[in-house]
Image 1: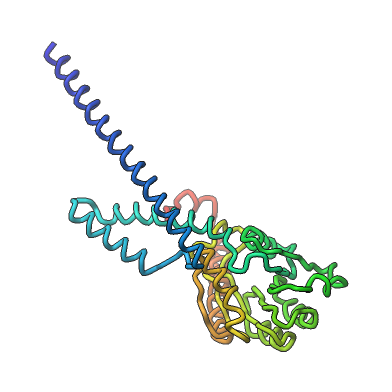
Image 2: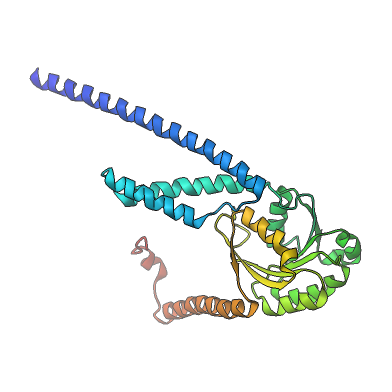
Length: 294
């Protein structure tokens, strides 16, 4: 009987503690909801003034403060940081989703040359959601180039690297004088020079360091290589910033030098690893059985 009473007392105490934890969890969810409401107010302010979503200094300062607060409260600061980085990531995602609908120059007409390709379709969606009038010029549409270019404020070349120079030369004569001409090629030197020769208006080189499967531009890097008329191109850079991208401004020559190293080292490492496995006659399925999380 004594053991039975003891068990009942333990069960009652556990139930009481669980009810308290449930109440605390409800408060946490309620506070997250209140925080999200404040985020909505921040979004509206940023949309009104075209302020970028991502503010690195503000975010890292907040994380540092919460770590210190956690330590003083007897919590593991790494645990607190992990929680807040997830909260902030969600906050940025919410802001970016809404900012995607904010066009810095909403209503402007944009032409994407190669718009049926994967990256072309990707940017088509982003610009369209932000209120731009998006047109596509693909290989079969060149007879219609004059009409498609009429009144556009931005032309983006989104074609394979080996075609970029010839496409720039071909589209240049059709563009309005004040239209921004940009490309998204991973090599910048030759494409940028070709665009400068083909078009006398604003020119800018872009290299998005992400692929078309990316669901958000939050903290995605976009390399910007200056061409001509930086002021005339600024609204395009502001648009990427409004979507949450990190803008990295760099000279075309430096960009190509760094990318040649980055891409070469990556491919060389893959090739060398494959050669090693082949020469050693490694049993790949067997090695996978020993794979650690790293």
